[in-house]
Image (cartoon, rainbow, N blue to C red):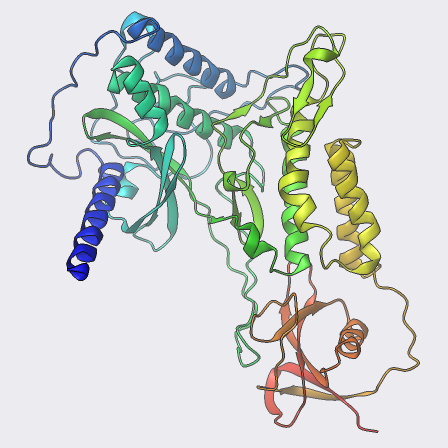
Length: 525
């Protein structure tokens, strides 16, 4: 009986997931409508509370105008001249998109804008253009390995593999999500509520394009990848592989709603703080550095100072060790208006901050300070100081303390993070150590020790002690500091800072040839 119940439950979950993915992936013209699928329009919505369809149309127009401001480069207060970039090329027959038919704008009553957005320069919908190749509906017709990744307030995310083998993420409005469901309960207009929610997805799409940066999920970049060896027997050398980060979107019919929007983005790994705490300090510092660079870019973006209102680890992903923001639908560009400092209070669960009100009537640097304190409480305080090189800890502590008190802005914070990188990458952080008292090590080129491992923390490999070093002297110092270390093997693998990876060993009873490695064993006597 238990097995039967488990099988029924598993089958139900599998069928639900498959149905959800098919709703996202179905592209018009690629296959006929399914039997029983309604092709007619949804029933006319009845009047809801708070003004019915007129209120819904007002909210849709407000979101539409927000997207238009960001798409056409409308800067917030204090912004520089915006970049002239249009979003994407969705014109019929345009590059990367082959639609069987152009999308038809369907207006809502009471003055709400049509959907999809009308063509035109700077428009985030059909007719806009942008550099580089785009993926469109045609790319979604032969995907494989569709998996549900997760969902939030508005969107659902799926992982699929394109015909070429590249895995990408698909984002779409979650038909079972809280955002769409609460709107339908209030207004009784499913299509109108979809358009209201879809404008958040459209806004995110515009911001991903306008806020181009290595730490914003984007496209058209090539990046080197480091392959960490699985063990000392792994003979694979570091491979630098150039790949194109994919990004595009598609309007498609789904369920009873025409022209639903699906975005195609780079696929990243979720940020799991417990796992990050078990990684090397070098990798954790990389995450904090990439976050500092991102916040500096957001504070000086072409649109003005951008704040992330929903700033949590789940809004970010890791791509080859780099932290990237992926969820921008709750980002805001406009600074907070004020008549005095009492209007400029930043409220957080643990404490509040009061910022000055400028002569122009805007809270000074509120957007960047909100981002900075959130970076402190979610990332810096956990990832920066722990297991860092001792000589760098005073500087790292000052970064954590200054961001926790908001005594620095993003410019100074990034400058100090870059200073830490320089000290670490150049080896200047190494404390002076004397040769006296050191054991001598015998040099065995072209060899390795396949066994005799021990564990250390933090290590790049869970089953052995694999650490990065600046030079041979640091490797000797590490081996001297480990009571069980009697030898170490220098590989030709390097980390993102160019440091070499070294295996530390308990002995050297079995040394074997390996042209890509060099072994050092403690001399007897």
